[in-house]
Length: 96
Ligand SMILES: [Zn+2]
Image 1: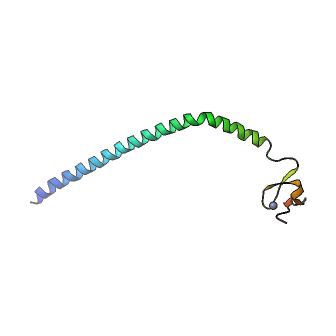
Image 2 (image 1 turned 180 degrees about the horizontal axis):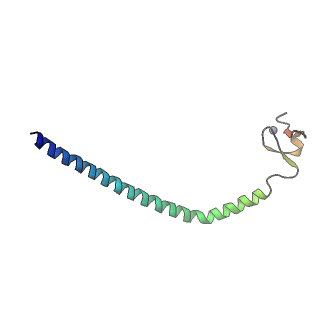
Image 3 (image 1 turned 45 degrees about the vertical axis):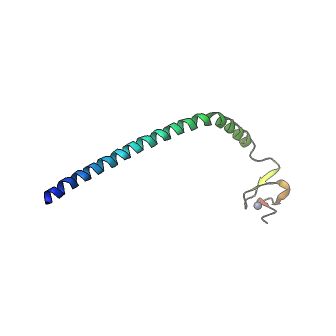
């Protein structure tokens, strides 16, 4: 009885483990394959607009601040010089 009970139980466990591992492997393969495809497609479709965006960003970065503007040392916002309340501390009128 004990042997009869043990034998099928062992087989069930083994089969269960096998099918779970198989499912895991299959699922992993499917997912990784899908992700790879998506990433490749995304990278390809992003290449053209990405180049345009970086060009625009560079153009903006050339002039981060105008000569008649200053960065407030309190709120760290760029204000026009007319908003400068403390020239030495570089504090805008909003923060004084
Ligand atoms: Zn400020």
